[in-house]
Length: 542
Image 1 (cartoon, rainbow, N blue to C red):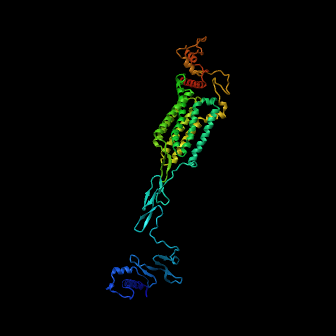
Image 2 (tube, rainbow, N blue to C red; image 1 turned 180 degrees about the horizontal axis):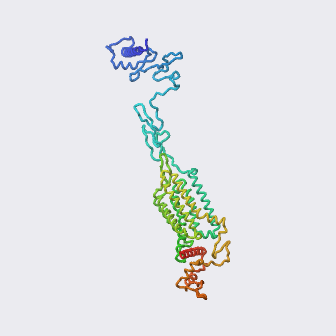
Image 3 (cartoon, rainbow, N blue to C red; image 1 turned 120 degrees about the horizontal axis):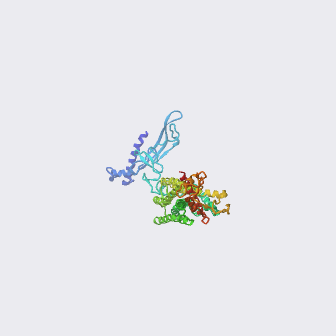
């Protein structure tokens, strides 16, 4: 019988089995007959119910039965049309279907390939991707953003401080980052600060060891110690800034950042202001300016620092120190101190004013004789400091999204500012004290120590220097002096002129014996007088 007739035969047998089961249930089996209850024929719903429950072996040797929907369980043989080794083609059974697929893949043959090709429209999307349907059955996988997860085949962003889990099915908290001490960005300012601290301590030790030598005394020891303390604080602040943020470190950083700078520049400001007042007052009178003593200078410097200290304390009271997390980039959380950019700028404004004032005074005193003060070194220090801060401000406030660069740039700005002050103002003195001790003596006054001659008389200072021919001629024309001296025998006036009354009076008035004055003021007054003498001579030449 052809295979195509097996299905109608099995259908007839299924109906027969259903009617047979109805007769058995309704009419009984002894004897088996068609009773009156079923005449003239079984009802359709009743027959369908029995039909769905039949089960028998069909003509193909497979079981015939139906599911709850009335569909027969199929049984299929799967064939592939293949070429035999002898060159002939025929159907080869490679699998069956009996409620499930059973394939013998080893019997499959494919043209030009050994592996089984895929027979799908689109592959399943990997984790973190959603389906962008092109039609009902095919799609294109689209990746979600790195801070989003998949929810109902859509991408949903995580809240700040959270990121998707490994499967991108939800969000988890991100661990806040802090600067590690072994980070290369941190090692550079830490090493720089460590070297600066050692150099500062060495400088302080040299100053203490040679505290009473002329070079150290002439440099204004008290203000130098104040400045060295400020430099040491600047180097130390790097460790506070780079430490793990906490309420304590944030409070120290708020106060210390501006305080260490104000200590440095208050000392420089006081020193340059003192030099300027001495010089400007010396042009008008020889009377000593007020508040130029060491104690006065220290008090002035501390008063300037106290303004910054009070401002920092008020800032702490108004805006309590605390820590917070910032999120400069997606999936990035950084632990930092809670402080606004405006507050940070305001804490540095006072120091900017001090820097500008120090630079102005350094510029004003740039032409004072070199051996009178440190004007040249102070000027170079302040010019370099201005360049450093002009470079720092755009770097810090122009990189709002890079916390590492902001912190490191702040540390390096403090370190460089301290290094400039230490190198320009203290390195020449330390070098002279340690390697040129023969220059570490007083010259030209009665305060000789060390290698100076103790028997030399006290220095007598005058405003007038050695008189040139021009000065003599100008003096001789004074109305208060006789124009001509004694005549020769031939009546010509003599070339020898008597000193004028004004000149004699000036010399006698301005000739000072200052052996009883302090050594520091003797030296300052000496150079003021010499400088004024130079100015007077230059005017007469003009």
